[in-house]
Amino acid sequence: MNVVVPTVEKHIAAGHGRVTCSLDGVSVVFSELSSTYPLKLLSPRLAHNDVAIVYVMNYGGGLVCGDRIELQVRAEGGSRLLLLSQGSTKVFKVRSSNRASTRLGNSTDDNPLENNATTQCLDVHVAPTSAVFLLPDPVTCFRSASYTQVQRFHLSKGASMVLLDWFTSGRKSLGEEWVFSRYFSVNEVNVDGRRVAKDIMLLEEPLYDDPVVGTHWPRSRRSLGDRLKPYSCYATLIVCGPLVDGVVAQLKDKLGSLTVLAMVAPPRVLWGMTLVDDGNIFVIRVAGLETEDVKNWLRESLRPLEEVVGIDTYRKAFS
Image (cartoon, rainbow, N blue to C red; front, side):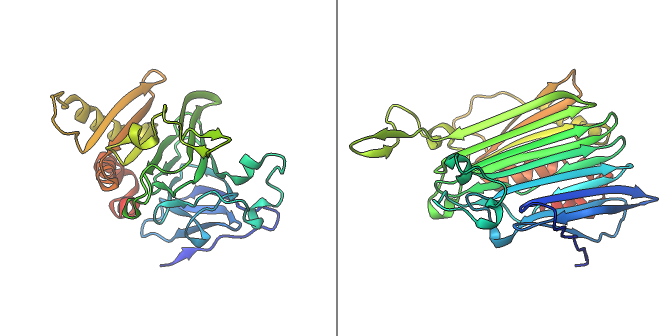
């Protein structure tokens, strides 16, 4: 696979990256594609040059405690950019020490909780007629993992976006379901400098310190598994802009055809849609018994994007 090799800038802090693209004639070109360890950015060359893909990855197959990833993205001049990943984002358990490469210059030694957290921050700016489609694989937190994610989109009038934030219950094959310590996610959308949507999710196991038995789960509180089962995958989807009109129209049709019936067993997929900012922003929430159930639902629901980015390009998002 031919790829655009990113430029590694020495002045970028560890774990940071920058992506800037624009439309030059009928081709999307990058004026900047930079990253530093443990963040890795790759852009494959596509058959159709009017759309670009950047894979956001990390070395070592996952994120460890203390890793801090910060990525700045700018889509300008009518460009269309897909931000994808290769496999789920794995978050390893909290340990007492950090990876030195991301700790230098980025942590505060007087805040041990902050030092141990695994953090990803994404800041996206989208110019008029441009679009960014954030369609990563889900986040999978291992046992005792602590993960924080902040994603902010800044849109100009006439820009388009899709923001997908989803996570699994953990490594079910190893018996790990909803046993991570903390999952904290913030998704924010701004249009012409005005915040129009902000979605916050916090999933956290309550801990209780006892001088005799030590730290344990309080019996009076329900665990994450008790609150989230039988579903093992949850997703939040935020869409906005003229290039996602086809997606919105299809979702409205699907929503209108839903029938409320008494069920003996939970459905494989539950979903709902909320209109925000006078119907300019659409927030969709999805829950599935299995990750593949949610993935299949997303693939079908977002299929109108094939007309925007091309069939072959779209397939790479849910391959």
